[in-house]
Length: 431
Image (cartoon, rainbow, N blue to C red; front, side, top):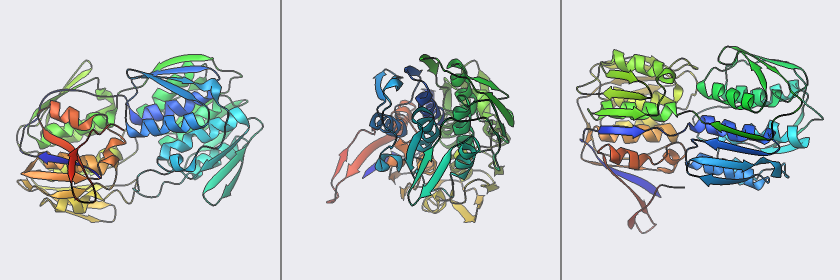
């Protein structure tokens, strides 16, 4: 089992280059299926979820090749419409290929998607939208079978501004007959990035970034497209918090501050110095942060994916903080693990109460999910002594070279694995 050993108490210092966005890249890889030709995506992070998606695409006939951080897809090779259950079960975003497969092949069979167990994340918004555009979908135990002659424009209202459903339905609508309107659409930067990619493919999309998106279907998309993935705002936010918990100074390169204003607002309220320059952001975390309250909301509100890392910072803040998780009811798995370090933190349903302590102490902890695992690593940076975080496989899903980047900033961290006998050996986190 992979784990990380971290010796806390070191102030991080230096610059870190932020990788491409995991969530944006996954949506672009799925949307690429609409192109019957070749797609080149640049600034793609080399992380476990991306490799899983490429394995899924390979299984349905779409071959990929890497050149640095660029991936080229031979999308003309699509010849299967039933991706393997074992691969789909690894990742929630795998469901995004359901509609594009139907659009290209007329039929698709999609197993239930997997992903981190952070709460109820039904696919009904996806299914309802696809059905509104003309698909016939049969739900069987463990899978969905969809058929369509051709998608047609529709008016779609989302009960919640789901980024995944917005991306999935916007993608399919680009080749639907007529016009499609998505009301209460998500406005995340990853949605905007996908719309830019689809426009580069020849799509006609209006209103992206607002609650109402209109897609005027086109008959044919380009056969060869190249596009850039935006920087990962969640990785950038995680490293911004690392400066504070370690009482250091970190410069974020290749980061877009416009995508992080909700986080930066709360960090500034906590007394953190943030200087935004062109494509570079300086975070100074000298001194103890002040307690602040946060409530997770869809973009442009405070991102749920940074709630857990933020809890690591608030665990050492001066005062009491109230954290309300409005999106995922199980996104509290980090709470008992932080308690092992001496954090005064308690969860009641989706509400987390944190009374900051002067310092944390070393402990052995177990990651329960992707962002919770990152939060535990951040907390160890503030702790005295040697800590261990197990189940680092979750962190590998969303962070490229996480340990290497932390080491580059001065952290004392290394990866190891244990066999059944308890013997340890150093390992590389690369998938």
